[in-house]
Image 1 (spheres, helix red, strand yellow):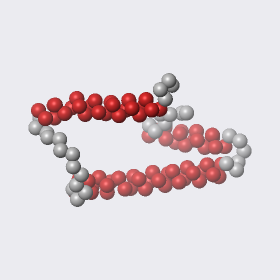
Image 2: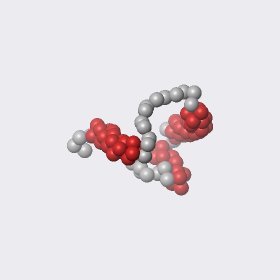
Image 3: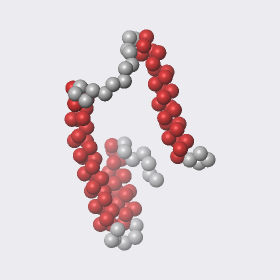
Image 4: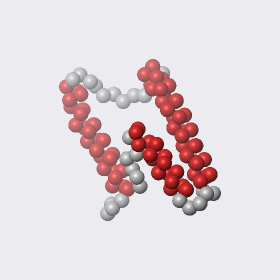
Length: 102
């Protein structure tokens, strides 16, 4: 609470950098040479984007449904939006997507 959300962002970034720095010597010893490059025509990148597209569309549709639910619930009695919020978290419980009840 003392440092705020900036400390969380900085800590996460530093943690990822530390993990990278710790792994590089072992990767070099194994024969892996790190050369950052982005080839848009690489078949693996094309496949990754092809697999990501349906997930992005499905997630977007789910968010649109959530907005529609909230807009419709805003005209109902007090507590309706909270009830919908808890119901959506309950639906996500088997998927493990319910780690934050705040």
